[in-house]
Length: 367
Image (tube, rainbow, N blue to C red):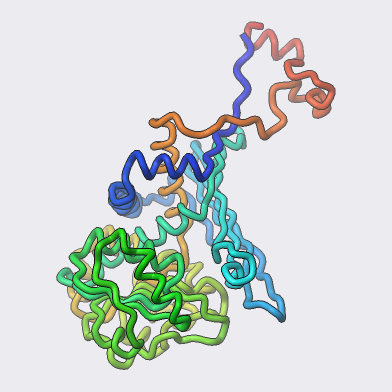
């Protein structure tokens, strides 16, 4: 009997919307935060290989610098998850598109077959928010009540959502160099039922227990906060640095803080850690999650989570969404690869021979 030709599960935005409607947005975020925490706690380099982000810098004299990159992670003997992501700060104004556009794909590590393909815009925003929640739960003061958001774009929505799931936030202070973005942010996060207030940057810095920077500041134009009047216990999730030369935090703040990168080799190139000597960089997030007792004392001092985007996070959110899709029987199976014909004849399928196999292969499968 001839084995079935493997196909690719394609998840469309409507499939993801059905997952959100079926599971619930809050429940999905809670599940992702917990699943990511577990993945970091159990991370084993002998089983999971994570490569740092690589790609192309897109430089245009008329536009802010962008990038087109790929982020792979391999579960040995099982699968590879790959995100291809474009970062284009001019997208919202010029094309009406998100700053970050991505697709997530999953490959069979044994055969190379493309098993699944899905949107990565929603997944990237979701997992980046969840990562900040995991880091903040380890490093921020447990009774943090005031959150400050510098930058009110798409990522700020999931930063607030995720942090609201692990802290009892009483007030959210927001600031953006574009006042309209700050005003519209109040509407975009109304579903959370929180007290969200646009405010001056100096007020935000002085009052926040937790502060998130999620900006599209240009290369060489940072920092975006002064760091002078922060609370002595303030924890910062620095989310916006993702290019060499692009930073959001002042060097003096980094030097007095425990700086925890998501992925050290990547953060040293394009995160806040690029400002520091290696000896000044603290443990990575996985270490903090695995040994929380070692860093309890820092919860009353300044700490920084240098979030450049960890491919492990992409693997976790992709697997989670695929699990829900399969359980709910969502998605469309499509034939993308040229499979099913004679594997020794690349022209077989092009001739319409979808079942041609060699005699040896037919005997092997009992055909």
